Amino acid sequence: MKKSILVCSLIFAVNSLFAQTTTSIGPMIGFNSSVYKGDITTEKWKSPDLNVGLFLNHSKNDRFGIRLEALYSSMGTAFNNSSEVVKAGYIQIPVYGVAYLGRKGAPVRPKLMAGPYIGFLTNTGGTKVNLDKDNYNKVDFGLKAGAGANFRLSPKIWLNTDLYYGLGLADLYKSDTDVFNNSWGLNVGVSFPVN
Image 1: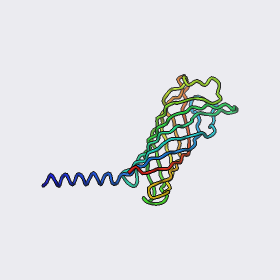
Image 2: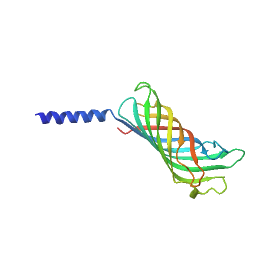
Image 3: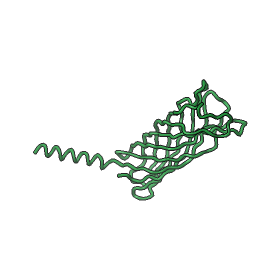
Image 4: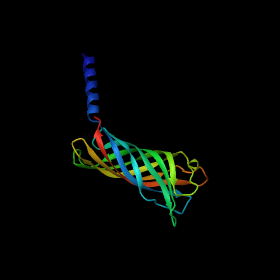
């Protein structure tokens, strides 16, 4: 009898845990602007460019959750007194801790988020002379922080909006010059429930 009660209690506890879990996925698109910072002093923010990818939201309670993204980001820099532009494409994977503000079930849920990211170089381009992908390190990493709001479109479908800032911590070039990605961006996406 005690074993039956224990098994029933465990099953109830597991069901309660998963009943409180919320997971959603969806596509996202947006734009960013970036600049190289470090040992160079002639750089300026480049014109906004494309972000596109997927995201996953997961939370076990009303206030805190995790957000995982996989997106293509066009990074790079522009230069003072020049029309030259450097572009470098990355597959970025940020992992955010998310704090949800406001009441659960409200039509608008503001949020704050922060966490690390890793990026993998996919391509280089732009108008800069002698731009060679082999001069770049293949991996970038850093920190991102942002704020946004989720807008309820239907009982379980949400429009996600995110404004973020990215601070690169990895040297981009293989040369002795230390250069780091800095970026800001705005993304929107639609999340669909998984459970």
